Length: 55
Image (cartoon, rainbow, N blue to C red; front, side):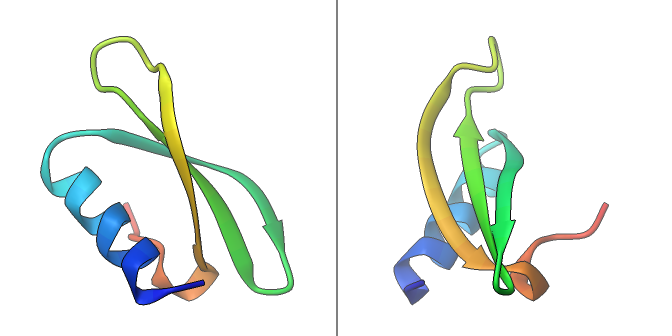
């Protein structure tokens, strides 16, 4: 996991994109970055579980 992945998730959320945890292992979450209009997966990032935003 890189700081770049965390920053990418933050930018995605700030721009209104949806995200979904698609896997978790050893304290890391694989997150799908999805479009806000149709839910199409555009990318994936791996971030620490503790770095995920809470709802």
